[in-house]
Length: 436
Image (cartoon, rainbow, N blue to C red; front, side, top):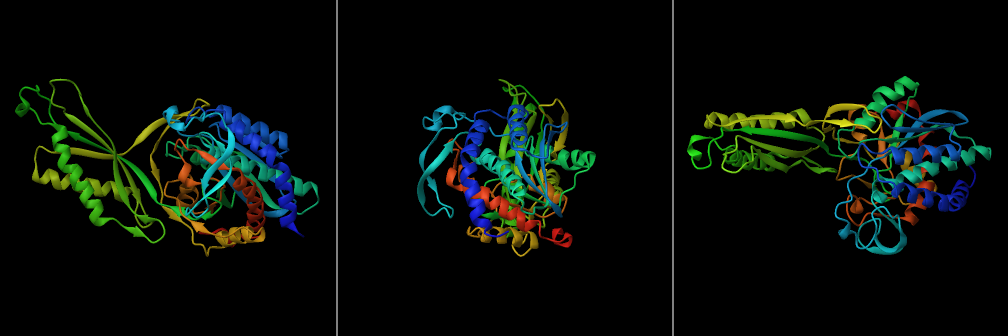
């Protein structure tokens, strides 16, 4: 495309007001996990208004929008999620309404997190995870539609997907999209660009995650005669110490993703009543792991600790399992899935990542690579399905899930251009380039 940078920059400037307005609409509609219908409706209405060739909702509540190219080529999925975390205590928001989508000038981190810049931002829950990025992906599709109308060749197919229930971490929306909706609709895809927060960098992976539930058993007795029972909480203390020691001594490290880790996130006991020695202690662990480790291996580590303590203490009894919690979508479907995410990463030298980098170079955006601290639905794509994926987004990881949730408008305008240029480069790849 001749002078594509100038064309895309001009088009982004023209579409920017509508994109910002759409982002504000998204932020003003609460979308807690299982209650995403209002936001899903907004995405569908906007894609229809903008002229997407096809847009629809699947039975799980995911939304899909498709733009056909003018030439044969790969299909690239640009992905967001529809839900967000709770707002928390509104008094912590510094006077901003979490659902107000207020725009003002604010101090924001720069791309490299070594300084601050005074820029125009949109405030509100999910501005940085992921409504700012989702709005950009929708309007990047509009830019492709405009280019197509202007007679420019568009290779392949652009698909936007907004999936439900990403925040609970079981990846239900993405799994059902890939396993059921796409086959039912005859849709295939070759690679994915996620709009999870990356500060306009290209992100290349993250650690895996498994949520482990440990139940330690004892025997109840009256609180006045604890020697007649077995206190499950007391039994838990040695176990907790040994888990921490084991992971600290045996953790694996990846040069890009960092070290594996474990965090005790929930602990409670039953019956939990006055004058009764507890007979059950329930512990939940957040276990992060790097490539080369597996979630089944994480379970086996805990079981080994249980076996060692049981061999020394005949009164110690415990079980470990992967947490599996039923989730209900806003369309009324309920399913329980194990809370696991595969670890994954893609090399910056992989053709998919190199093409994305060329896309940024083509519009004179700096090429910088990074890796998420948190997990994403790309575990399904690259971890399980072994298809290439990257992250590229105007949102910044530092602001996610916090009462300082906001997104830079200047980054959003740049992401409009970056998304389209990345898409154009990715669709130049041959089929062999989409293998991991």
